[in-house]
Image (tube, rainbow, N blue to C red; front, side, top):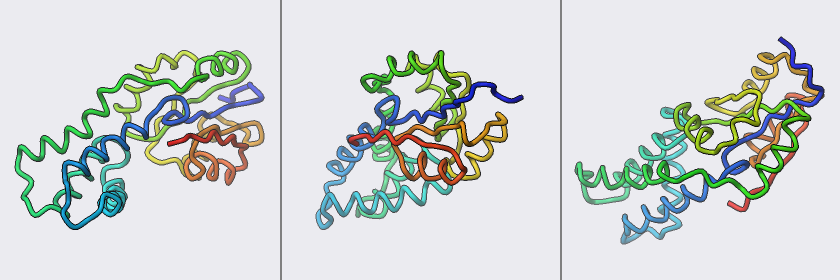
Length: 202
């Protein structure tokens, strides 16, 4: 069924509507301090973690579950100590602490959504684990502004084409709004959509 609204806005969530990456950065800093590697600098440890995260995303997708696996694997690669059950729980706690944070809405977001919602058709478009992202959406209190919600495993050209087909959208009157050129802007433009880049400091 076609959406009649002439302007359809797909809006990213993490670091566009609410803070997200800053919590991961803090968890990484605590993990690096905990590892306290004798030979690798904090920057080098971070580099190893980034490589391991890429590996984990292939098998576990995005989200805290994948992040926790990456922390454990990084510890296993760099530490001379075996990962005991106690260490395993301690390392996982760095990831689990992120889930405990309340939604920290970016200033100006509620007012902007209140303005846009009556005028356009809004589709919240976010990637990650379904349960994890659904929880963020509920805690944010912003769900009421959206006509639909799409939680996807990846944000790439096939995904955007799938969303366009699902809602029978005209790319020329559809926009993607978000903070990531790689996930939000470039693939949307490749599908013939318009895009608005909303930079984020983190």
